[in-house]
Image 1 (tube, rainbow, N blue to C red):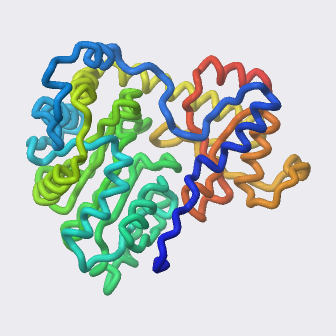
Image 2 (cartoon, helix red, strand yellow):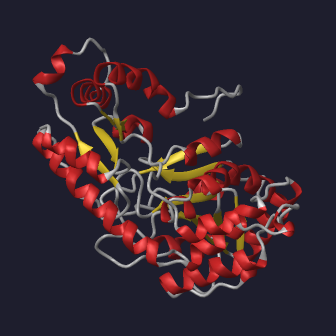
Length: 379
């Protein structure tokens, strides 16, 4: 249960600032693998679209997205997954973090009797943060080892569930889930399932999969150009699925004045229409993951390649090398400190993603390949 007074938690990655400064002081620079911020160039088509603006793109843009953007989003999803959606099943958003952070607040207006959000126990922190902002309870469920256990979501709890989040490929674990049980649960329980699919095109051993189907009843999927097209700065994402839910969200977001800038909407169309760059980017991330797995392996940390996404989720162990650290922290923080101060590599402690992550670190493959190759030569 929530406290009556809202207490803002520390922003996770700000907690790394002091350690990063210490590492820079020692090594003059760091290889920052903590935040999943793309560092590669956006497609040339995106840059050209931003450079060649028309007068209409400087005025107030449509909150739901231009017809060109909605159509481009629909065609991209169909080409990728085979799922056909009409443009009235899609809305555009200012990057998907904003959408996820505000979604529980908006859904609460539609379903005021519901007070609980379900999400993975190990997860992107914004699922829980959005719930806290809305004054709701966040109920974590173990979605590990590729399985989704829904057996505990019954009785009074089921009646109180506002929505269920799933993330596949998952951040931080890299797992890919069979989404069919959740689709069946959504249909039978009349509970909204929100599938965060921002890494959908980085599935390494299987084709891209969405939770959406022709009906999409009680289903919502969230997609982003930030990871796909190295376009985090233009802030473009989409939500799609259940017509009634999408229509409600489009209207309330319109009233709130939430809208993607016109130049970004034009650039997003260009990004969706360009498929060549994603194939190149896939190869880049796959190579970096392999280099990083080898690097951490040489340090004695076994790092399995993920099924999807561009993170390594590495299990930790007690080690004599940590004994020189003068910090009274859990295992993930001790390893994070040791790595920063002994190798110049900054990672994320698994604690950021839930209490079950205290014996893990997350490593994002977001440094230039040549810098990672240089790093590998030093161990």
